[in-house]
Image (cartoon, rainbow, N blue to C red):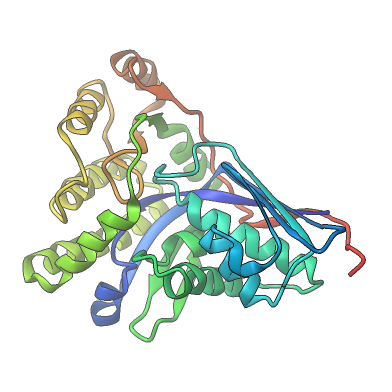
Length: 329
Protein backbone atom coordinates (compact mmCIF):
# COMPACT_ATOMS: atom_id res chain seq x y z
CA UNK A 1 0.00 0.00 0.00
CA UNK A 2 1.06 3.55 -0.73
CA UNK A 3 -0.36 6.63 1.02
CA UNK A 4 0.12 10.29 0.16
CA UNK A 5 -0.58 13.25 2.44
CA UNK A 6 -1.24 16.54 0.67
CA UNK A 7 -2.01 19.90 2.31
CA UNK A 8 -4.78 22.30 1.46
CA UNK A 9 -4.01 25.97 1.06
CA UNK A 10 -4.94 29.42 2.26
CA UNK A 11 -4.57 32.16 -0.35
CA UNK A 12 -3.97 35.68 0.96
CA UNK A 13 -3.98 37.73 -2.26
CA UNK A 14 -3.98 37.49 -6.04
CA UNK A 15 -6.58 34.77 -6.49
CA UNK A 16 -8.05 34.88 -9.98
CA UNK A 17 -4.85 36.11 -11.60
CA UNK A 18 -3.95 32.43 -12.07
CA UNK A 19 -6.73 32.12 -14.64
CA UNK A 20 -5.37 31.92 -18.23
CA UNK A 21 -7.77 34.65 -19.35
CA UNK A 22 -5.69 37.01 -17.19
CA UNK A 23 -2.13 35.70 -16.83
CA UNK A 24 -1.64 34.98 -20.54
CA UNK A 25 -2.07 38.71 -21.17
CA UNK A 26 -0.78 40.35 -17.99
CA UNK A 27 1.06 37.72 -15.97
CA UNK A 28 -0.38 36.77 -12.57
CA UNK A 29 0.75 36.18 -8.99
CA UNK A 30 -0.65 34.91 -5.71
CA UNK A 31 0.69 34.80 -2.19
CA UNK A 32 -0.48 31.71 -0.32
CA UNK A 33 0.43 29.19 2.32
CA UNK A 34 -0.33 25.54 2.79
CA UNK A 35 -2.08 24.63 6.05
CA UNK A 36 -2.39 21.65 8.36
CA UNK A 37 -5.58 20.36 6.76
CA UNK A 38 -4.79 17.38 4.57
CA UNK A 39 -6.04 15.09 1.85
CA UNK A 40 -5.00 11.45 2.23
CA UNK A 41 -4.92 9.10 -0.75
CA UNK A 42 -4.20 5.37 -0.36
CA UNK A 43 -3.46 3.15 -3.33
CA UNK A 44 -3.19 -0.63 -3.31
CA UNK A 45 -3.05 -3.43 -5.85
CA UNK A 46 -6.39 -5.21 -6.29
CA UNK A 47 -6.15 -8.98 -6.75
CA UNK A 48 -8.91 -9.47 -9.32
CA UNK A 49 -7.89 -6.91 -11.96
CA UNK A 50 -10.92 -4.67 -11.33
CA UNK A 51 -10.91 -1.06 -10.09
CA UNK A 52 -12.37 0.18 -6.80
CA UNK A 53 -12.51 3.89 -5.95
CA UNK A 54 -13.73 5.05 -2.53
CA UNK A 55 -14.53 8.72 -1.90
CA UNK A 56 -17.96 10.09 -0.92
CA UNK A 57 -19.26 7.03 -2.72
CA UNK A 58 -17.72 3.77 -3.90
CA UNK A 59 -17.21 2.78 -7.51
CA UNK A 60 -16.53 -0.83 -8.48
CA UNK A 61 -15.78 -1.05 -12.20
CA UNK A 62 -13.99 -3.35 -14.61
CA UNK A 63 -12.26 -0.77 -16.80
CA UNK A 64 -11.23 2.89 -16.76
CA UNK A 65 -13.92 4.07 -19.18
CA UNK A 66 -16.59 3.14 -16.61
CA UNK A 67 -15.16 5.40 -13.89
CA UNK A 68 -17.43 8.34 -13.07
CA UNK A 69 -14.87 10.36 -11.07
CA UNK A 70 -13.25 12.52 -13.80
CA UNK A 71 -10.00 13.22 -11.93
CA UNK A 72 -9.40 9.53 -11.19
CA UNK A 73 -10.36 8.44 -14.71
CA UNK A 74 -8.10 10.97 -16.42
CA UNK A 75 -5.17 10.41 -14.05
CA UNK A 76 -5.24 6.64 -14.55
CA UNK A 77 -5.38 7.12 -18.31
CA UNK A 78 -2.52 9.64 -18.23
CA UNK A 79 -0.31 7.25 -16.24
CA UNK A 80 -1.33 4.19 -18.30
CA UNK A 81 -2.73 2.28 -15.33
CA UNK A 82 -5.47 0.09 -16.74
CA UNK A 83 -6.82 -1.86 -13.74
CA UNK A 84 -6.15 -4.07 -10.75
CA UNK A 85 -6.06 -1.13 -8.35
CA UNK A 86 -7.92 0.22 -5.33
CA UNK A 87 -7.93 3.95 -4.47
CA UNK A 88 -9.35 5.42 -1.25
CA UNK A 89 -9.40 9.01 -0.02
CA UNK A 90 -10.05 10.84 3.24
CA UNK A 91 -9.87 14.53 4.13
CA UNK A 92 -9.56 16.56 7.34
CA UNK A 93 -12.32 18.97 6.30
CA UNK A 94 -15.24 19.06 3.85
CA UNK A 95 -13.68 18.42 0.47
CA UNK A 96 -16.18 20.20 -1.78
CA UNK A 97 -16.74 23.94 -1.97
CA UNK A 98 -14.47 24.64 1.00
CA UNK A 99 -12.31 27.33 -0.59
CA UNK A 100 -9.15 25.55 0.58
CA UNK A 101 -8.23 24.04 -2.77
CA UNK A 102 -9.28 20.55 -1.72
CA UNK A 103 -10.02 19.33 -5.26
CA UNK A 104 -6.50 20.18 -6.36
CA UNK A 105 -5.07 18.64 -3.19
CA UNK A 106 -6.91 15.48 -4.21
CA UNK A 107 -5.44 15.62 -7.71
CA UNK A 108 -1.89 16.28 -6.49
CA UNK A 109 -2.15 13.56 -3.83
CA UNK A 110 -3.59 11.05 -6.30
CA UNK A 111 -0.90 11.81 -8.87
CA UNK A 112 1.81 11.52 -6.20
CA UNK A 113 0.50 8.19 -4.86
CA UNK A 114 0.01 6.68 -8.32
CA UNK A 115 3.49 7.77 -9.45
CA UNK A 116 4.93 6.04 -6.38
CA UNK A 117 2.73 3.01 -7.14
CA UNK A 118 4.47 2.77 -10.51
CA UNK A 119 7.88 3.18 -8.84
CA UNK A 120 8.46 6.63 -10.33
CA UNK A 121 9.79 9.73 -8.60
CA UNK A 122 7.91 12.91 -9.44
CA UNK A 123 9.17 16.40 -8.58
CA UNK A 124 7.09 19.11 -6.96
CA UNK A 125 7.10 21.11 -10.19
CA UNK A 126 5.93 18.08 -12.17
CA UNK A 127 3.18 17.46 -9.58
CA UNK A 128 1.90 21.03 -9.95
CA UNK A 129 2.17 21.02 -13.74
CA UNK A 130 0.55 17.62 -14.34
CA UNK A 131 -2.19 18.20 -11.76
CA UNK A 132 -3.04 21.49 -13.51
CA UNK A 133 -3.11 19.68 -16.86
CA UNK A 134 -5.43 17.00 -15.50
CA UNK A 135 -7.93 19.43 -13.98
CA UNK A 136 -7.89 22.17 -16.60
CA UNK A 137 -7.20 20.43 -19.92
CA UNK A 138 -8.35 16.85 -19.35
CA UNK A 139 -11.29 17.46 -16.99
CA UNK A 140 -12.20 20.82 -18.54
CA UNK A 141 -12.58 22.72 -15.27
CA UNK A 142 -12.42 26.53 -15.75
CA UNK A 143 -10.01 26.98 -12.84
CA UNK A 144 -6.54 28.39 -12.24
CA UNK A 145 -3.18 26.89 -11.31
CA UNK A 146 -2.46 28.23 -7.84
CA UNK A 147 -4.01 25.38 -5.84
CA UNK A 148 -2.05 22.62 -7.56
CA UNK A 149 1.33 24.29 -7.02
CA UNK A 150 0.49 25.34 -3.44
CA UNK A 151 -0.41 21.73 -2.58
CA UNK A 152 2.64 20.27 -4.29
CA UNK A 153 5.23 22.63 -2.79
CA UNK A 154 3.85 23.51 0.63
CA UNK A 155 4.98 26.49 2.69
CA UNK A 156 4.44 30.23 2.34
CA UNK A 157 5.12 31.14 -1.28
CA UNK A 158 4.90 33.76 -3.98
CA UNK A 159 3.57 31.85 -7.00
CA UNK A 160 3.89 33.62 -10.35
CA UNK A 161 2.04 32.67 -13.54
CA UNK A 162 3.79 33.72 -16.72
CA UNK A 163 2.43 34.53 -20.16
CA UNK A 164 4.19 31.45 -21.63
CA UNK A 165 2.23 29.17 -19.22
CA UNK A 166 5.24 28.51 -16.99
CA UNK A 167 4.98 28.88 -13.21
CA UNK A 168 7.55 30.09 -10.68
CA UNK A 169 7.31 29.21 -6.98
CA UNK A 170 9.39 31.41 -4.69
CA UNK A 171 9.43 30.80 -0.92
CA UNK A 172 8.82 33.95 1.10
CA UNK A 173 11.85 34.40 3.35
CA UNK A 174 11.20 35.83 6.80
CA UNK A 175 12.20 35.47 10.42
CA UNK A 176 10.71 32.56 12.35
CA UNK A 177 9.02 34.95 14.80
CA UNK A 178 7.29 36.68 11.86
CA UNK A 179 5.93 33.37 10.59
CA UNK A 180 4.79 32.49 14.11
CA UNK A 181 3.05 35.87 14.44
CA UNK A 182 1.20 35.29 11.15
CA UNK A 183 0.11 31.83 12.28
CA UNK A 184 -1.07 33.13 15.67
CA UNK A 185 -3.03 35.97 14.05
CA UNK A 186 -5.11 33.74 11.76
CA UNK A 187 -8.55 32.66 12.91
CA UNK A 188 -10.76 30.61 10.61
CA UNK A 189 -14.48 29.78 10.65
CA UNK A 190 -16.56 27.32 8.67
CA UNK A 191 -19.59 29.13 7.26
CA UNK A 192 -21.56 25.97 6.51
CA UNK A 193 -22.14 27.29 2.99
CA UNK A 194 -20.66 25.49 -0.01
CA UNK A 195 -20.55 26.58 -3.61
CA UNK A 196 -19.16 25.64 -7.00
CA UNK A 197 -15.75 27.26 -7.43
CA UNK A 198 -15.83 26.44 -11.15
CA UNK A 199 -18.97 28.52 -11.72
CA UNK A 200 -17.59 31.55 -9.89
CA UNK A 201 -14.21 31.28 -11.60
CA UNK A 202 -15.88 30.99 -14.99
CA UNK A 203 -17.68 34.30 -14.33
CA UNK A 204 -14.41 35.92 -13.21
CA UNK A 205 -12.66 34.57 -16.30
CA UNK A 206 -15.36 35.96 -18.59
CA UNK A 207 -15.08 39.34 -16.85
CA UNK A 208 -11.42 39.69 -17.86
CA UNK A 209 -12.57 41.18 -21.17
CA UNK A 210 -13.80 44.17 -19.15
CA UNK A 211 -11.08 46.84 -18.69
CA UNK A 212 -12.36 47.89 -15.26
CA UNK A 213 -12.21 44.28 -14.01
CA UNK A 214 -8.70 43.87 -15.43
CA UNK A 215 -7.59 47.04 -13.66
CA UNK A 216 -9.02 45.70 -10.39
CA UNK A 217 -7.11 42.44 -10.90
CA UNK A 218 -3.89 44.38 -11.53
CA UNK A 219 -4.43 46.13 -8.21
CA UNK A 220 -4.88 42.75 -6.50
CA UNK A 221 -1.69 41.42 -8.09
CA UNK A 222 0.19 44.52 -6.90
CA UNK A 223 -1.04 43.76 -3.37
CA UNK A 224 0.63 40.34 -3.62
CA UNK A 225 4.04 41.98 -3.85
CA UNK A 226 3.12 44.47 -1.13
CA UNK A 227 2.21 41.59 1.19
CA UNK A 228 5.47 39.83 0.38
CA UNK A 229 7.43 42.96 1.36
CA UNK A 230 5.41 43.27 4.58
CA UNK A 231 6.25 39.69 5.57
CA UNK A 232 9.92 40.03 4.64
CA UNK A 233 10.23 43.21 6.70
CA UNK A 234 8.33 41.79 9.67
CA UNK A 235 5.80 44.65 9.54
CA UNK A 236 2.87 42.41 10.54
CA UNK A 237 0.78 45.40 11.68
CA UNK A 238 0.27 46.24 7.99
CA UNK A 239 -0.73 42.69 6.99
CA UNK A 240 -4.37 42.79 8.14
CA UNK A 241 -5.31 46.18 6.64
CA UNK A 242 -3.90 45.10 3.26
CA UNK A 243 -5.95 41.87 3.43
CA UNK A 244 -9.02 44.00 4.13
CA UNK A 245 -8.31 46.24 1.13
CA UNK A 246 -7.72 43.20 -1.09
CA UNK A 247 -11.00 41.54 -0.02
CA UNK A 248 -12.99 44.67 -0.81
CA UNK A 249 -11.46 44.74 -4.28
CA UNK A 250 -12.12 41.04 -4.82
CA UNK A 251 -15.84 41.41 -4.07
CA UNK A 252 -16.05 43.74 -7.08
CA UNK A 253 -14.63 41.12 -9.47
CA UNK A 254 -17.89 39.21 -9.95
CA UNK A 255 -21.35 38.94 -8.46
CA UNK A 256 -21.65 36.04 -6.05
CA UNK A 257 -18.19 36.31 -4.48
CA UNK A 258 -19.89 37.52 -1.31
CA UNK A 259 -23.48 37.65 -0.08
CA UNK A 260 -25.35 39.61 2.61
CA UNK A 261 -24.74 36.94 5.27
CA UNK A 262 -21.00 36.81 4.57
CA UNK A 263 -20.86 40.62 4.57
CA UNK A 264 -22.52 40.67 7.97
CA UNK A 265 -20.13 38.07 9.42
CA UNK A 266 -17.15 39.94 7.99
CA UNK A 267 -18.26 43.28 9.44
CA UNK A 268 -18.85 41.65 12.84
CA UNK A 269 -15.34 40.21 12.78
CA UNK A 270 -13.80 43.57 11.93
CA UNK A 271 -15.80 45.39 14.60
CA UNK A 272 -14.68 42.76 17.13
CA UNK A 273 -10.99 43.40 16.57
CA UNK A 274 -9.93 41.80 13.29
CA UNK A 275 -7.66 43.91 11.09
CA UNK A 276 -8.61 42.17 7.86
CA UNK A 277 -9.81 38.93 6.37
CA UNK A 278 -11.54 37.25 3.45
CA UNK A 279 -13.60 34.34 2.27
CA UNK A 280 -11.05 31.74 1.20
CA UNK A 281 -11.06 30.48 -2.37
CA UNK A 282 -13.37 31.70 -5.12
CA UNK A 283 -15.90 33.11 -2.64
CA UNK A 284 -19.55 32.82 -1.59
CA UNK A 285 -19.05 30.24 1.15
CA UNK A 286 -16.63 27.75 2.56
CA UNK A 287 -14.23 29.18 5.14
CA UNK A 288 -14.05 32.73 6.46
CA UNK A 289 -10.60 33.81 7.62
CA UNK A 290 -9.66 36.79 9.78
CA UNK A 291 -6.29 38.26 10.62
CA UNK A 292 -6.40 39.63 14.15
CA UNK A 293 -4.18 40.12 17.20
CA UNK A 294 -4.38 37.00 19.35
CA UNK A 295 -5.91 38.95 22.25
CA UNK A 296 -8.99 39.70 20.10
CA UNK A 297 -9.68 36.09 19.06
CA UNK A 298 -11.95 35.36 22.01
CA UNK A 299 -14.12 38.42 21.29
CA UNK A 300 -14.34 37.51 17.61
CA UNK A 301 -15.38 33.94 18.44
CA UNK A 302 -18.07 35.18 20.83
CA UNK A 303 -19.40 37.62 18.25
CA UNK A 304 -19.52 34.88 15.61
CA UNK A 305 -20.76 32.08 17.85
CA UNK A 306 -23.11 30.91 15.07
CA UNK A 307 -20.04 29.84 13.10
CA UNK A 308 -17.68 26.99 13.93
CA UNK A 309 -14.07 27.98 14.56
CA UNK A 310 -11.58 25.61 12.93
CA UNK A 311 -8.09 25.61 14.48
CA UNK A 312 -5.44 26.03 11.81
CA UNK A 313 -1.64 26.03 11.58
CA UNK A 314 0.78 26.48 8.70
CA UNK A 315 2.31 23.58 6.76
CA UNK A 316 5.73 23.71 5.13
CA UNK A 317 6.23 20.30 3.48
CA UNK A 318 3.73 20.06 0.66
CA UNK A 319 2.64 16.70 -0.72
CA UNK A 320 4.55 13.74 0.72
CA UNK A 321 4.41 9.95 0.65
CA UNK A 322 3.80 8.80 4.21
CA UNK A 323 3.68 5.05 3.58
CA UNK A 324 5.46 3.18 0.81
CA UNK A 325 5.30 -0.55 0.26
CA UNK A 326 5.98 -1.32 -3.37
CA UNK A 327 3.28 -3.65 -4.73
CA UNK A 328 4.18 -6.74 -6.71
CA UNK A 329 3.29 -5.57 -10.18
